[in-house]
Image (tube, rainbow, N blue to C red; front, side, top):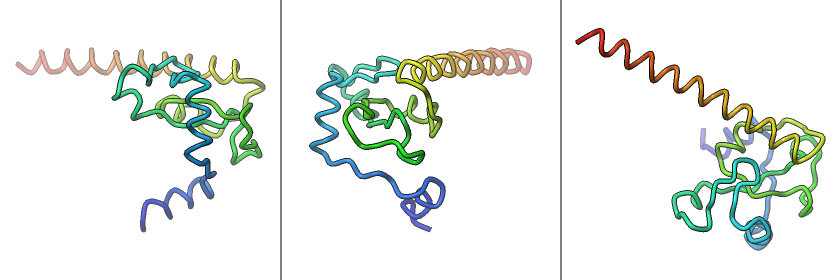
Length: 121
C-alpha cells in the first residue's frame, strides 16, 4: 500500500497548505519551531525538518487560518500529535515536558547500554 494511502488511513486526509501560505507562516515565525525553538533560518539541517503545525489540530476541527498555524519541527509535531490544547502556550508546555521526559529515557537507555556493553568485555 503506498505511503499516502497508509497516512490517509491512519490520520484522514492531510490538510493542504499551499507553499505560499507555509512561507508566510515560516517568515512570521522567523523559521523557528514555536515549541522548542529549533532555528531553521541559520542551519540547513534544521530547516529540512520544519513543518507547519495546526495548534488546534485540523483533524479535530482546527482551521487553516494564520492564528492556528505555527512553524514546528517534525519531532515536536510528532510529540504534540492530534491533541487539543487550550492555547499555543499549553501546547508548548506539553511538548517541552514530553521532550524532556523522552530525553531522560534516552539518557537512561544510553547509560544502560553502556553498562551492559562494558560488562560484556
